[in-house]
Length: 161
Image (cartoon, rainbow, N blue to C red; front, side):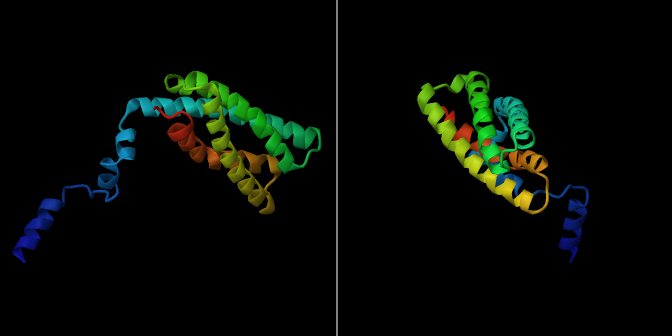
């Protein structure tokens, strides 16, 4: 009884420990999270993504509202324009030090982007079916697939050899 009471007194002033932090800390992901250059790269990727987001939504809105194109077809067209913008800027700026052969990286970037597009189309269709207007649904869908896009491009398209 006494040992338990003294232990509880010792622990009273301490903050509770997260059970997840020690698990992540020793992993590759944990080491990557401690590198400042990865956070800078994420900020650059997000900046490029923001320009791609603006390009994507602008083209999407012009096609849906201005030209009367079906929202799923408009999403594919706006994706093609935005992915060209994003690949160019990510290759030249975000992953500059990780440049490989332009064609190989371009193909990998396209594969990751097509996977992100597929996820985007699923989210977009689900959000529109749930009653959201097309443009806000597209805006949300793009945000939802961004983590998939970053991880795929960081770990595969622009990986360091």
